[in-house]
Each structure stands twice: as C-alpha cells, then as structure tokens.
Image (cartoon, rainbow, N blue to C red; front, top):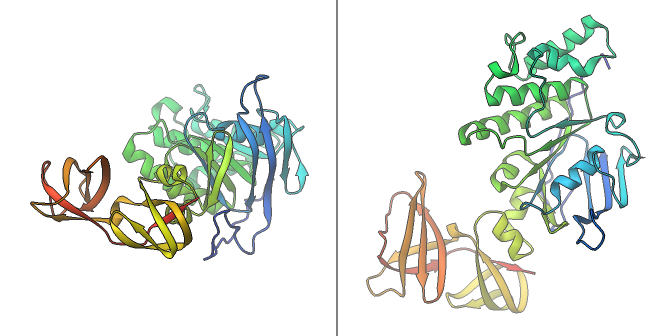
Length: 362
C-alpha cells in the first residue's frame, strides 16, 4: 500500500463491432454478468440483464437518459445496492456479498463528499489510516501534486473552486490506489467551461494512476470526451457498447443514433449498398435490403440556396464554429449543421442534399 500505483500502457484497437470491443493486451478487470435489480414487486426492472466487461486501465461511460438504470448499475458494482440476480467479478472474485469498504473500489460522488471541517491534506489522508502518519502525509502530498493542488494543502473545501474540490475528491480516491474508480455524474456541479477542462484532467489523472474507471453521465459529449468505450443504456438495458467513434458512426438503433448526438431519421428502400430515398439514391455504410430506417447526421446534409427550392429555413442557431439550422420540407423538419461562413436567414428557400454514406438502423 506504500507503493505508488503502476502506470499501465493502454492502446485502443482499430477494429470495433456493434457489440463493442476490448483493448488488446490488457487483462479483464471487471466482469459484469446479467445484472438485474427490481425495487418493488410488479414494477419494471430498474436494471435488466446488464452485461459488460472492463479491462485494466480502461475508462468506460454508462450513458443514457434519467431513469435508464445507469446509476443503479454503478451502485451495485460499488456495493451500495444488492443485485437480485447476476454476477460482479473483480479480477475473478465474485464481490456482490462484500461491503463497499472491502471491495477495493474508489467512488467519486456527485457532491464530492468532502469533509468541510478538514483541510485539503486531511481530506486526502482520511482513507490512509492504515499507514503511519508520515507515510499518510507523503502519499497525500504525492496525490495532490498529481492533481495539481500543491500549495493548497491547508485550505478548507469551501475555500476552493468547484473544479479544485473535484480534484481533491479524486486525489482522495486515488491515494488508496484502487484498481477501479466509479464516478456518478462528477461534473454536474461545474459550469460549462469548467466541465470541459475538468473532464480532460480527470481522464489524464486516471490514466496516469493506472486506474480503470466507470463514469455515469447523461451527457453524450462528456461520455465521448472521457471514455474509451461507452455503454448506452435504455430502460434498464445496455443497447450498444462501443468506442465513441463506433457508436456515433454506426448506431444500431434510432435511440442510439439520437442519443449519441443529433440525427435525422429517414426511411428508404435498400438494395445492397444503396438505398432509395426521397433525396435520391444514397450509399450505405453497410449492406441492407428492404425497407429500412436510416440515420443521417446534420453535418452530412448540405444546404443549397434555391429561390424555388422545396424547403425553407425555419430556425437558425449561431454557434461560433458552425451554425445549426432547422429546415422544413413538407411535413418533415430536418436538422442541418453548416460552417460559420455561409449564412441562410430564416425564411430562405433552399434545397437539401445528402453528401455522405448513411447508416441503416436495426
């Protein structure tokens, strides 16, 4: 326990499948098998047959809307909820009957759970009571240096910014060198600019410490920024696991396509690698046949000015680096993202053109 955690090398593979992938040359740390949790008899399960694994040093996000079961899943892994069915194996050891403190798992709470009457240094040393005092202090200072808080050891939590408090909570967790850190919406109390900065810091710190991590979030941008893999959850089930790129480019359902960023859902008649749509024949990312639903990202659509065009701009949002348009064509309203250069005012008549391969769903 006196030794600093080992830093693991970690390289993601190039290939991926709709069911997800595992980092190569890394051993499985956590194996979750068919977890189920029902809070009241007769209610729908809060978690239903959730299965995934996590490798040493890997960061995963559980992503989904409120009430989808992601926090309940995290709490079962951490020991704060007991599964009705299923297995949780940590390095091959079945842990559901162990109390939280016996699992060797770190937990970063949404409110950070810092002790307000203790200094920063005392907060970090709190979990190191099995060490001699000198060793506790040395370890705490090492972790505070890792999170960039050297010089703030004597401050109380209320004297820190939200981002600094979050780093103290992370330093306290990493001080005991846990193989796995669980994080439940840890950035929700930060403002938008601080969230972007802090989530990158947390990713770097976990990688440097060699700890694997599971992040619960409803924010797809946050999940894509932090995680090596994402498990998308809906109504208690994992519906797709993959890298951020895989999930964005190859969603398996309209739910995943719409939750992993914005998406326009169209229908068409597929024949192999081509699909016939109201926008003409379009190439597909994978072969399909028959009537299919299609995911078309807003950035895959071009707006062309046309005074006699079939569509009109009904809404516009300037976002600095690009612009988001709502374009009405008949009964359909499409989302379109274009560069900040060309501007279409609300009321402009336009023509829509899809300029990339589209994804068949289901």
